[in-house]
Image 1 (cartoon, rainbow, N blue to C red):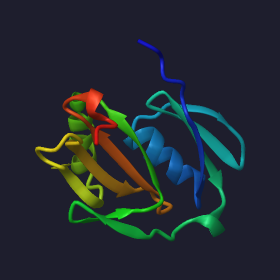
Image 2: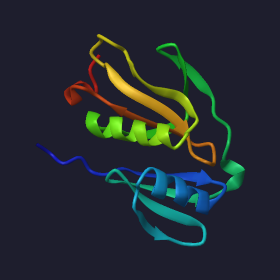
Image 3: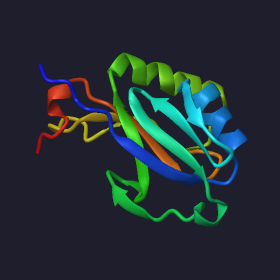
Image 4: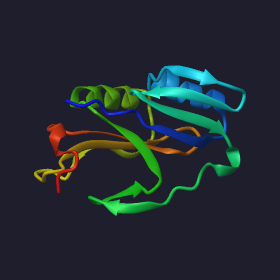
Length: 140
């Protein structure tokens, strides 16, 4: 089995301390390097970087997917199902205001998946999803 290389994503935030609290404390992403203008996080083995850029935060458009308004600009992670359920419970218990509450979409289809969408404190949309059969990630 080949190892998937980690991706790198930089995104804007309007408050680095709020980003630290959200990604570090709530989502459990260890903090890496940082400066006065940005913070690295280990996002489930991938490198995401919150950059202080308040003028670039906020706007989110949506498209209809499975009867829900899915944010067009979003990022996320595909977790093992057990980890997805733990994250859903942690976020629900923390009172996160979901864009799309945790549920299973595309039921009975090859791409059946558990998913949830929420925003970070700067308005960036984040998705967490899981597949009962991870080999179906790209199934048509």
